[in-house]
Image 1 (cartoon, rainbow, N blue to C red):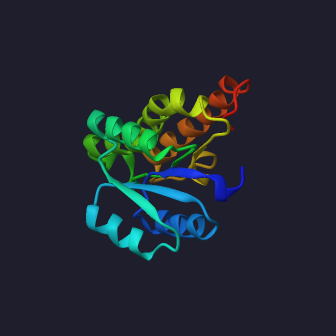
Image 2: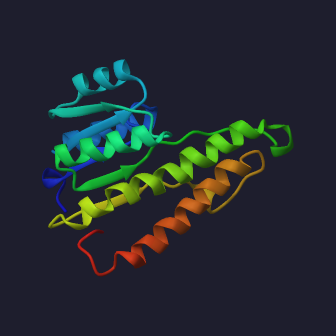
Length: 173
């Protein structure tokens, strides 16, 4: 798919790398639906992009945020989903608060799976579509102090590989 024909839902758009990715995709001619939790950061990003874009302020860690993203994706006519949003935590597992570990697992693994599932009926109906799940080296080569993050990214890698097989007979790449 040529980027000039892409209508992309980009999660985690306001982070450092998310912002850079949004800029490059916009320069290449992609239409962007930018998501994030912070409305002012989303608006600042949108204003800095060379191509027109839309924003959706939503917390994808919630069912309401997923529903809002699903609705906005349909209205924007999305044909590419880029699951980029992520959170990290650094430290030895035994010293981490369980709520923080659970948040890392949820945001980095459950949310991309849930959002993908919510958008699959729409994406599979498109003439051409793609799903991109942003992984990390930590998903393949785990490091001490990154156990929850490594586990989530390894899970995302496994999910992506299984989904590729499930979608082999569709127009979704």
